[in-house]
Image (cartoon, rainbow, N blue to C red; front, side, top):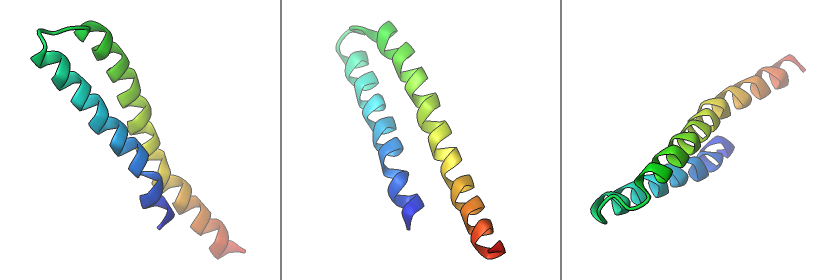
Length: 67
């Protein structure tokens, strides 16, 4: 239950980045170069956070089963 709650924020961030990119594209590419660089960095951070969440919960469950 906790892992699904912690994944909401990264998914919302990815959706917001896509919205900003779409708005920039439809407004004659205004600030497109800055948004692409920031979006790429943020997407990497969000994807790393999404990927690390299940590993943490799996390691916690192993610790509980050992104890």
